Length: 157
View 1 (tube, helix red, strand yellow):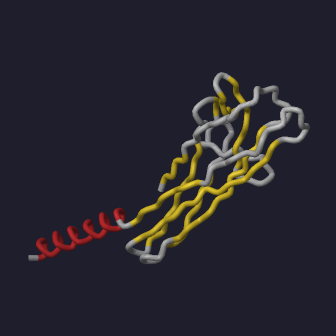
View 2 (cartoon, helix red, strand yellow; view 1 turned 45 degrees about the horizontal axis):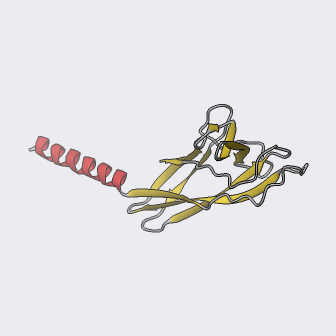
View 3 (cartoon, one colour; view 1 turned 90 degrees about the horizontal axis):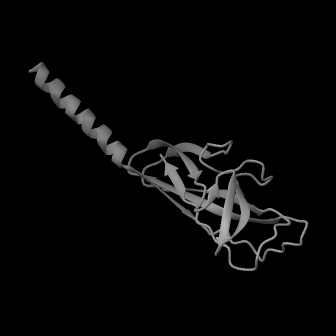
């Protein structure tokens, strides 16, 4: 009799644990980092900022923690990101701080990541905005054109 009750209790606890794991959802979205027209003769770098948004929601109160990582983009490396226009390349970088000293990457090559954590209440979504700061280095000898890159955001929670 006692064993049957212990088995029921174990099953209920396991069910509650699995429901809690499935009761949390987080999503990530971002506004494009759209630089203005680049002047290759300017001594000043071209700076811009944008926003990465993480939204988390839970069906039960739960402590959530996550990391937000950025990959290197379609060409280049995390330490040297590149936008392309045909065969031409334009170096740029993405940072997690306004001083543009911490490269926002995946934690490799000296790059940083964004981490956060907080208590989620039942059915009350939490929206967190993280600024991303972009910079195109000054005095790059490039052809005129539309330069593009695609950076993937990885949200791990």
